[in-house]
Image (tube, rainbow, N blue to C red; front, side, top):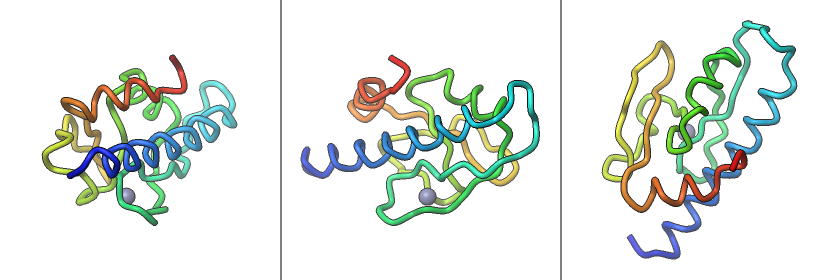
Length: 108
Ligand SMILES: [Zn+2]
């Protein structure tokens, strides 16, 4: 895959993560109801929701390279599945994709 496409995919994923940050901030601290977070996969046009609680999302977001995606939305080769949870997967970016994700982290 060429660099330009790689960059666009990384930008797309970073944008979803920014939306999810806003969703997480909109919740009261300690609130544990499941809310709909956007699938953070690389597929253009994917706007599916994943149900998880804010604390669960926070746990994933504590790692710059980790994203939440629906089962089947992971990208083999640029990320690895680190956890399989009911309804969604936690993936971790590897190599250059991981560095791009760290660089685009809104928390850094
Ligand atoms: Zn997706």
